[in-house]
Image (tube, rainbow, N blue to C red; front, side, top):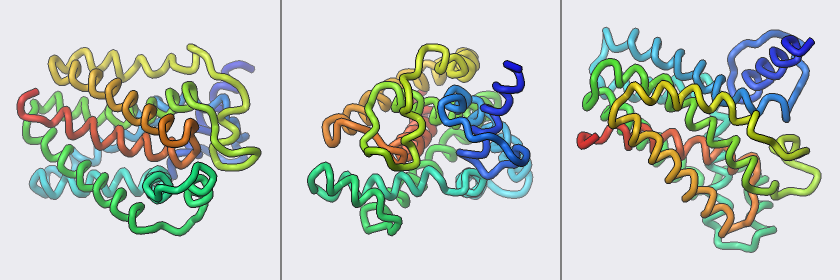
Length: 252
């Protein structure tokens, strides 16, 4: 019974943050799926790794980096990018908290949203390209595998440390029905353990992860003192871009 419940929660996580098939008639389990976000990230990273290796036989690193980013957009259904655009429109509108939340709820994307999406995609391309050209083959493959897991792990921290910003509405509402505990962070250890085999790049990866997490969540707290589903998506996108860029630095 417990195994069946965990499998249902895992499948629910796959269906929620990707377009990957996970079976039909899967029960929606918002609280239960949270702990599986890093595992889904590892699956995405594994698919990205295979995709990258395959197309690297046909195109140079820069082209591969562009296609890698497009691949991530496709397999996630641009779900987190949509959140990034809405978050940028709201947070950089310089309006009141209530108006910012209202702007983020609008399905239309404004100029700040478009700029944010463009910049994040550009940084991801630059980051993946630098990872592919500055590290060893093993480091490249490992980073392609675990960076998507780290970025989705960041969302668990957002759910744990900030209150939900909307009342009785919103995509992320169900994740805040009750407080999550240490057990919900258990799968975060998987990418962390893998990072230990990356030498200095692994150390930089973890330090940048913690630093970026504190900066983004601190910014959210200062601006709105809360978080929403869109802001969780934006956190994921920012973290993924920053981690690829940081671990691709030539000095690492």
